[in-house]
Length: 226
Image (cartoon, rainbow, N blue to C red; front, side, top):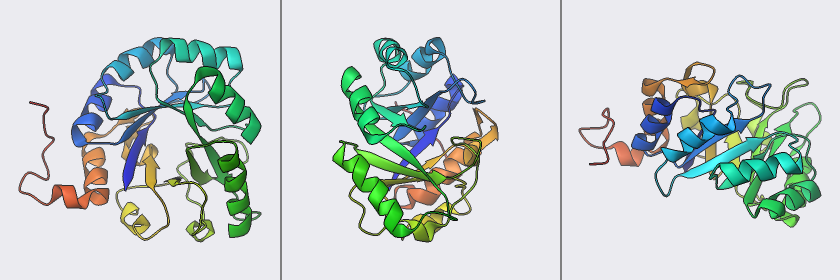
């Protein structure tokens, strides 16, 4: 299973995540978020990410000119649309900057069913998404709430690889192993404060997910690149 750590603001945190073998790192370009970064901060953070670790740009209802400016200045790999973007808007925006993309769906247990979630995924698959992210619905927030949704609503036969987000921690992520998902995405579950990661929590989360990699005497140590 793939692991994405999201919401980085500190250089040392992103370096630690890379050393731990995270598969992707997320940078938030949504000013109202306490985890938001500027283009200048993102340039510094992305420069510390080794090859083969994916840099994901999280945007919320970003205008085309803003996205073009972002793409011209920050070397990210994938766009994560986390707002009210339609499938066609996602397709057009991503095409403008020639990037792969994924869409976050906020799952509302009071309204959604497995069939409705599957249908939403299908519309984004048809528009060219590379993956879909499932997060918990909140009336006033686009994400980062730390809340879980009902995992029984995750479809077994999704037309796109599913990234699971929302309320994940070291204590509950092992329960995702049997779910029909491709990856997990965590932010608050590895933090000491919003935007500031906890090295011990990051290490424990990676050990819980990538347990096969950690079956050795040095499981509690962060490896170096030397």
